[in-house]
Image 1 (tube, one colour):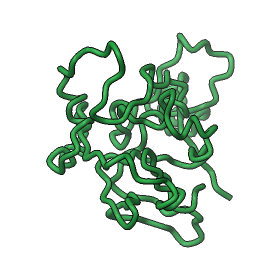
Image 2 (tube, helix red, strand yellow):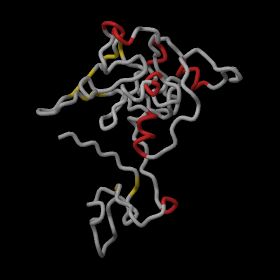
Image 3 (cartoon, rainbow, N blue to C red):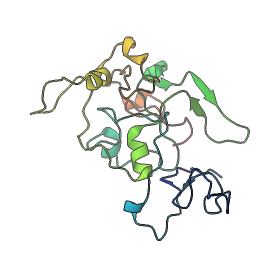
Length: 206
């Protein structure tokens, strides 16, 4: 049985799992300091869990969770709901333009292969944690919609950069998550189902 757990909140009853000298380990969150059980609390009283370093700092211009993306236009046919979803930016490419992680891990009995070192999609993380989804519509890197100001932000330039030089910054953990942008014109039929031009999911998650 697969189980995906993404904590949305810091536990409101303790500090890092500790309720103080009289109580000790928090009984509500079992000492982990994070929880999704916040019944009776208003969201204004809660502290969101931090975004882990393995999640993209911002959604890519061609994020699958942007309005108008090929994945959303396909009614989410290629978007896993209860499985992790990795950003394709910076991944190496294999046969037919498929996106291939450099390192993977698959525990005994697991149904999904986990890519190691690749970053989780910012749009997917926003969806799973109740954060706002990307507001601007999907666009292919290097293109601009009518009325969009000329490029001036270094972060956007990095996300649009199709050179290998940009890929080196992908896993740096800095706000500017630069990435090598693969060519976005390959027919989807030429790729495995998990390797859509604009998304990356575990090989057998879909």
